[in-house]
Length: 536
Image 1 (cartoon, rainbow, N blue to C red):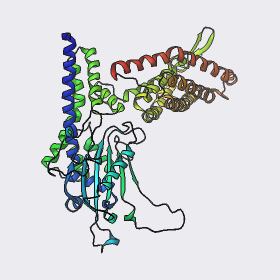
Image 2: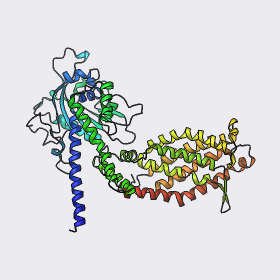
Image 3: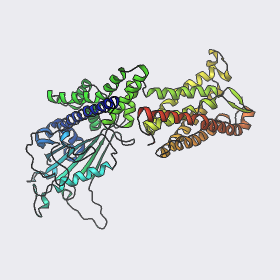
Image 4: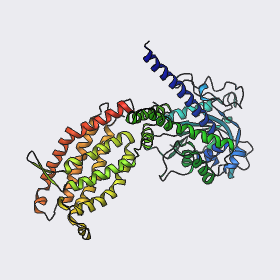
């Protein structure tokens, strides 16, 4: 083997070994953190009906039995009831996988708990016990429905009770089970949601009244984390986001956990929180360090690649991978917002400047505004439709105000002086309102069409079709709102024909210039950043 190729293979192998150990440390630490009784008590209070009225201290002291088992109990039928050598030993993730993909599965955290007596069951003699399982999951769509896997875990926890808890036909002894899944990187639409799946009766004929405890034997709870700033980011959702965040500092985590959630930060718990924080922040640190070892521009590119590699090894979502890159290499999301505002303002000014091209009367705005569709399509492709819509609505008002002031100062393509601001220009105001109406409707249409077609194996149908329909709605809305019934007799009479010409020019320029530009940018990201096709 040539020396250069051998060195490359050795470096790749070394990186793989180092990353495997890095992943194992993160996994072990995260599971151990989730197994802390204070953390489990917060999860139980926020997700398990039986403990909603209990204090966290009572849950810790009274209701969690023994020491929670971490990665030591198998899920599959042949592993579940194997005798354990010691309940005090915490086994790491390197003992849990028999293959490079999934292999033998173990519960992340599993423990027994006592259900508190309710007000109407004060005289019950039998202690009701529960079996609770807590799982941390980064990949929300691992190739199968995650909810089905959670139901399977519940089923296994019930069937595994045969022998240790009940024998023969003693089904009345079956304990209720909970499987709680903490999804750190959920898909769009699932962020900051808390969902419970359980067995409930359906009265088909008559009103048979069965005791709840006889059928309510399994519940799946999905805790889907999200970013701060939304209405639902509170309670257990905020608690888990703070605890497992890869962007918050250790001191910030400690302050929020202590002050807002009353978590007593012991030395061991503080150390575990800090270690998870440091390991997750190592994702970005590795990218920065590798970037510094190369030249300026090639170094930045290599740093981006390193960040992508590390994030992929951590099963971090594509959206947050891009966010890490942008944060670390000075490409914050707010620059996309600024791009939208800049293009809108520029186009609203350029639409006032006429242009004759090949005998066709149009405006300079025809060739500036399509850039907004490229920006929107790339935003949807990388960040998802929800963030794209958010950027659109955040850009609306600043663009409206700036468009009016600049359009008034430079009305009809020439500087009018600041005195022109002392009076309201109905001409500019109408154009501005028309532009905003067209922008919102056109962009929402663009996102809707693009989202429907983005999963096609070919990259071009999504931007082409979204551009055709988005520009159509944008153009005709703009011309109708701006010039229908206007005091300008020419524009009032010919707005429909002008709109049609404008639309045809936009589509022609889009197909000839802007869609190819989109393809080039997408190809660059696929080849040199993500190293895989970005068509889903």
